[in-house]
Each structure stands twice: as structure tokens, then as C-alpha cells.
Length: 126
Image (tube, rainbow, N blue to C red):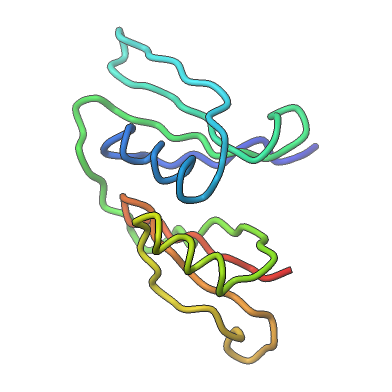
């Protein structure tokens, strides 16, 4: 068994694809419209779905935003340099919500950014 993907509902698919591909450097792996169901699925990630976990962005055409609730935490991405990743994210128009630094009660260097819908992305320094 392995994790295939994590699904996030997004209010504006083009805006989200811009963030995940341009700001975070993922590739759009596949996209399909389902006109009868009035939704689109887009899969993004750093590698092929056959060997990497990816993110499924689900856009329901009639819904422009979602209540994120308090159960979901974040998606984690390994980076070489968390501070540099924050600088690059900011330069590309992304929102840094926690600057790079050691995690509370530990030494691992982490940072957090938000996607256009408010989902948190954690950068964990390698």
C-alpha cells in the first residue's frame, strides 16, 4: 500500500494551479472536466503518480470558497533551505505565514506558507 494523493477543494482552479505550479514548482500531471457533475479535477506534484504522492485539486464549478474547518493541518514539502524557499515564495506572490526557524520544542527548521484558498503548506528543511 502507499498514499496516492491528498484532495483539496479549491474555489478558483486557475489561481490554485498558478500557485502550485509557479510558486511551489509542481507539475500539472493531469486535468479533467466533468461537465455533467459540474466539477474539474487537477492533479499536481513533483513526480509521476506511479511513484509519488500528489495533490488532487477539486474545483466544484458552483462553489467559490470553502470553510477550511479545524481538522485539516497542512501539506508538508521538503526543501533544501526553508528561508530561501520563503523568499522565493514571497517573490512569486505567495503568502508566508510563519518565517523559517526551528520548530517549537525542537531543532528542525520549518516555515509555513498559504495557498490561495488558505491551506497551509509546511516547508521542512532537509
